[in-house]
Length: 411
Ligand code: PMP
Image (tube, rainbow, N blue to C red):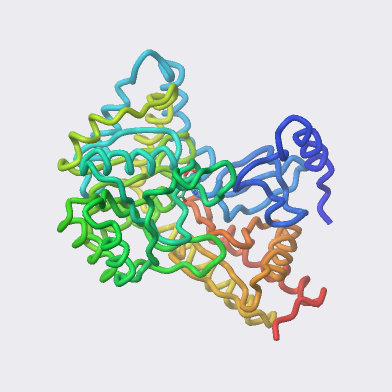
């Protein structure tokens, strides 16, 4: 088993001074004991837990790591800016440079606003949509994640019904249910928020149906509501011009974050001219939202993405991983479903609603040196080499052998 004594000791200390020890989506108690909770180091596509175990990482910090942890060019740009001016009495020159670059890069972007977290960005989109339309209803897909403040958190604890009173749900990729939700909103429709593609937790990922997206665009064109792309998770991983660019659909507003500064903390809202006035009127801000270092990191990251084959490399590595895992599953007698874009893979075993097999597999893979997630989509990064991916496949193959020997067998 893992030598995770330091991890356990830290969790014990945390539980005394942090409610629950660790909160939210990164709390490993949700995926069962044995997953390391605390990390000491990261580099490229590798992470080391506090007990010194090294893993080839297929989680990539839940998205932010796109070019590899500690990319030298990105980190140098951020550190240089940090030494000059980071948090101050106002923005640095980097804000203008980054906004110009976003407008230049992202389809449909005539302007940009910056925040810190993805939730900030989705919330700002909702505010702009409501301010523009003078209306209240926001349509969201059942089961989609848009963040963790009262209007959108998936939990009901600490949240009132009023916080979510103006959300109306539809089923992803179901144009008829989207139309029904719009009808329900009547003349109070402010916006429709849709993720890049369907990447809900613990279910097969689904690419966006172009006809469904066209229907969303048509409803917004007809009513003046904002079509909002929540691109927080997929930002730049599917396409540098935005995740719907390949579909030819322009959102009115898009929320971006995670990978746009390769791990430095920043999010962005970009939008079209029709929403510029509303975007200038709403009041949202934060002490750290103008931080220059993260903006410098974003400028450097986007520059690298434009000049390199980083995105297509992550796709190639994702396809290599998918093929290898398919073979490993077949060899070991498991039925494994791999869904979504190859560079954002989701692994789920058949007949495993309680994740008995998935959790055991993940834990066993850790022992063989690879970090997979049993129920959330994962991420490839530009630092994954074919050899790294092959190490991951080998760890998965050994993990499947281990759990098969331990009696985890599919009928
Ligand atoms: N929207 C989507 C689609 C996300 O995946 C996330 C983060 N998982 C968020 C919003 C919220 O981002 P953050 O956690 O940075 O607030």
